[in-house]
Structure formats: C-alpha cells, structure tokens
Image (cartoon, rainbow, N blue to C red):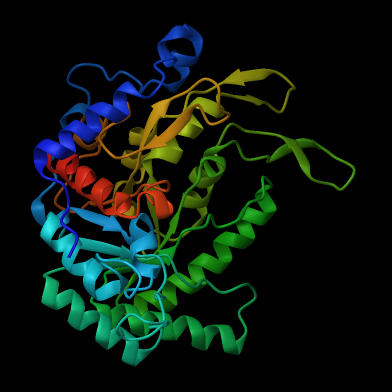
Amino acid sequence: MFDAPSQNEASALARALRLNRRQLFAASTGVAAAAAAVTLPTGSAEASVKGSTGKIPKGKRGIILYTVRDAISRDPGAFVGPSGFQEVFAALAKIGYRQVEFAGYTQHANAPGGASLESVAGARQLRKWLDDSGLRAQGNHGFIPAWPLTAADEEKFKLHLEIANILGMQHVGTGADPTNSAFKADWDLAAEKWNALGKIASRAGLKLYTHNHDVAYSFLLDQGPADAAGNPTRSSGIRRLEYFLKVTDPKYVHLEMDVFWAHVAQYKFTTYTAADGSQRQDVFDPAATVLSANSRYPLFHAKDGEPDLDVTNGYDIVPFGTGKIDYKRFFRRVGRTDTRNPMVEQDTAPGGTAAPAQSLQHARLGLQHLAEL
C-alpha cells in the first residue's frame, strides 16, 4: 500500500512548492490592500472571541474527498496503492485525519462495493469502512432538489438524508451556491427553497448547508433603475450570501465557507454602484462575515492560495499550508474551533498518470499544516 510522505518529505515538498510560485502580490500596493485581511483594533470583540486560540482539535481535522477523487475513482487492479473508498479511508486515517466530507458516493466499479454506494446498503458498507478506519463523516456535497419540489425529488432528497444518518453525519449539503443570479428576486426564491428543505433536513436531525464560491460574495443587485427586463441594476451594498443569511431561517439553513473563494471575493469585488449612481468601495472581510452569523458556519473548506496578479481570481490554488492565506489568524478570529469543522480541500491535487500518488501526498501535507495551526 502507498505510504504518505514523511514529515521531512512533506516539509521539503512545501518548500519546493513555495519556491516555484511567483511572489507578485506585494508588487501592487492597491491590490495587496484590497486582498489583505482587515486589521482589527486591539482588544476588539473579534480579537477576543471565546475559544479563539486558532488551534484545531485532532477530532476536527478533516478533508473533503474531492481532494483525493482520483484515488477513489481509479481501478484497484491497475495501480499499486490506495484505490476506492475502503483503501482511501485507511490511508487518510493513517495520515491523521479524523473527519471526511463526501463529494458523492461513486468509485471505480472494480473497487469493493462496486461503482455506486448511493443507497441504504451502500451507506451501511461505507459506514463500516469509516468505523474500521476511525473516521467520521461530517457532510456531503450531494443532491439538492430543484424548486418547486416534485414528489420524486422529495423522495430522493429523503434518501440522501437517510444515507447521511447511516453515515453518522451532522450536516448534509451541496458544493453549489443557492443561485448564480445577481438579482434579489432570485435570492428570495432560493431562500424559500432552502428554508423548506432545511425543515425537512431538521426533522431528520441534520443541518442543511450550502457551499460558496467567489461570486456568491459579490454585490446583490437590489436597487433601481431597472433594465429592459425589469431587473435592478444597482446595489444597496449588501453581498448576495449576506442577504441570503438575512432571509433564511437560522434554525434550518447553514453555510460552509470556502475560505479560498472568500478571499478571491475579497480581491475581486471591492466596489459597487449605489442607487444614486455613485461608486462605493467596500472590502470584504471573510472572518467578520462568519462572526456576523456565528452559529451558521459549522463547516469550512481549508483551501490555500498563492497570490498571482496574472490570473482573474488573484490567487492560484496550492496545497494547504503552502500559500499565503493566513489561516492561523482566520481561525483565531472566528473562534470556537471546538464547533468548527475545517475540511482540507485542494481542487488541483490529482496528479494524473504522471503523479498518481500526488493527491494523497498533498493530503498529508494539508493535515500537517492544519495540525500546526
């Protein structure tokens, strides 16, 4: 079985990755200021949140399986190393992870259990493998029905809730934003949907959550004048997900902040056109947004970025702990690390045929840095 790199090897990998990344962010004072975290006054409420040591307890150190999706999906007969859910669970536990977040329930057809475990029987098999490895499932990027809800979709949604309960999850959700629209009316409709689904999930003992990308923290269009289709063209200055939090029930709807995409939003969305036509500036502060709705952010994606002025997003995705996003400060500010569930994620971890072990190597590197917070 493939062994993850030693701590010395992981440190060497981190150093190599840093040396190979461009250090351009500081070259532009204006851009650097927009992307930097907002400095807190000494002694402010945010600087002294209860439980705000920044230390992530061992039991809360998790990873979303999307990071190692290549290992889960490859043919166990064609690669000497972890393949499929059972072996990947064992490898992640050996690295030191204690929690996982699913990104679906499919694997290679030749892996134990077959291609799809999206069933009650499949969930029971997955739960056994989780228990054998000492892992806990904490959430899933899974099925969220369209709206209005059809009878068939409601039954499928309830099946996913049953699967989540078998797996021992506390949360169930999706990797998508509630809507891609910029308009208030569409976010109101999304809120209606999520409030209803959240109630169904709550009856099953689960918290429903949505994951964010950068555009979900851009500015909501909720002010006139209207365009030819009757849609608003200007903003009150509230960001889309901040509005979503205002119009959804805190008992039923929760969020998973992808901290990388939140920092991309901080870099990209700094100005809006107010109702009077003037340009207003507002720099997004991810940690302050969490604190404004503290109990509604039980999960996080711990995804790192290296500043890069040559790309639209302002950051390149890199293995967790090798970039410049200050996670120690972020978790110290948001506090309550006993109730937060950070999941290491790296969209670019799979190395393909050239580096088939890379995603698990990077998972090891991510755990090392999560533990060092």
